[in-house]
Amino acid sequence: MPAARVEIKASAELKRVMAAYYEEIRQAAEEGKGKVAWCTSVGPAEILYALGFRVYFPENHGAMLGAARLSSSLIPAANSIGYSPDICSYLTSDIGAYLKGETPLKKAYGLKSIPRPDVLVYNTNQCRDVQDWFSFYQREFNVPLVGVSTPHPVPELGEAHVRAVEAQLESLIEPLEKVAGTKLDTAELRKVVALSRECSDLWGRVLRTGAHIPSPISFFDGCIHMGPAVVLRGRKEAVEYYKILLAELEGRIKDGVAAVPGERIRLYWEGMPVWGRLRDLSELCISLRACFVVSTYCNSWIFDELDPSRPLESMARAYTKLFINRTEQIKEAYIRELVREFKVHGVVFHDSKTCPNNANSRYGMPRRLAGAGIPTLTFNGDLCDLRLYSDAQVRTSLEAFVEQLTGSAGAQEAKGRGQERP
Image (cartoon, rainbow, N blue to C red; front, side, top):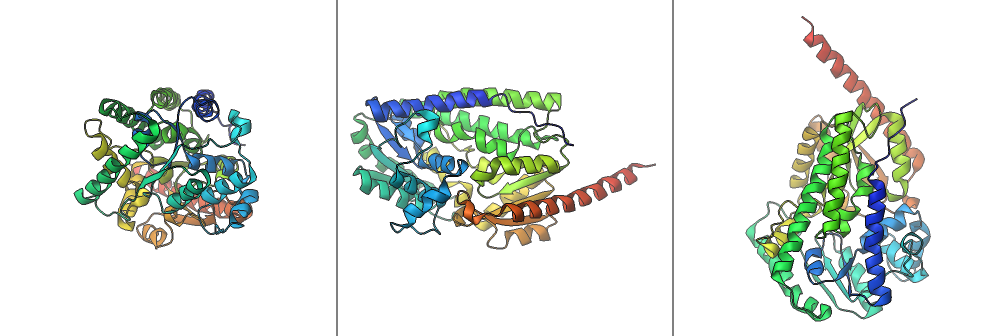
């Protein structure tokens, strides 16, 4: 029987940080203590925080709906008003929840409902769906909708790309100042960008602990602990939290504590999480002694281009360079490099039905990687809609894949030992 998993102690602090974040939003929305801006998860949060907004991220709400396994009952409500079951299930879950007056924020953080926005701000660097998503709420709440339309897909990042996005960021400032009722202080923006960069650097160091054998953190841990990097980048609370988490993970490395006790197979998760099955998949991997040590998804909130001396330009560079916004060639090279760096045995692609923009198995990449000697597995599912996910099929596929990799790894170890003999 495998050893019991050791829980990450920083989880208690994570709950406190996230509760404080939502309490600020509650006070703004329900007690009038500030203005609320809705922002897409890789939108220009730094400008919003610098203007004093409380910043709410509907994608975080979509993930909560998925994790709470509520989406399958909510999505039909969005379908009934014309939103296709084939589009983003974050979008359809969230709109369905709004139409039915449901939200896990009530029970988790004491909000009466999702917070009413004063302004909606998007960046299409992830997909076009976010613009359509926010457009729904613009019509519902009759508030300003502003955003950035990022070039897509981007090959090598050029100055033309950066200038085009930087100009759009600049154009957001005046309408946002009108809603905020204050002028943007450049010094404050630089301070927020500096905090964002510090948060990003710490988050990157947290994820890179996964390169150690055995890994002190798994992809499933990363999905939980990435919350502050998404909703609080630009705030000191996120920086302080990741200092605590990083110290614990470095202590785990020193003490030999593994995220998956007895780790023998190291995997790469490619694509969106299956939010409603994080715990199930985590427990399955522990039973198989297989650890997802790296993922594209969690790495998407590492912004090493942010520079407080050039706030808008560096934001344009960082948010356009995003993995999901890149060409197939750039993505493949990125994955190959991480496979090497994290000493991965195999790559698992999640082909998420309603998220084609972050499903990278559809244009031959798994076969190309396999041709280069990197074993791959692709399974069908969805980020939120569990009607599109089969527990039995995924379990059987993952078990067979790990068994195959275990045989290959064992053969390589035996070969290595043979070569070491005099």
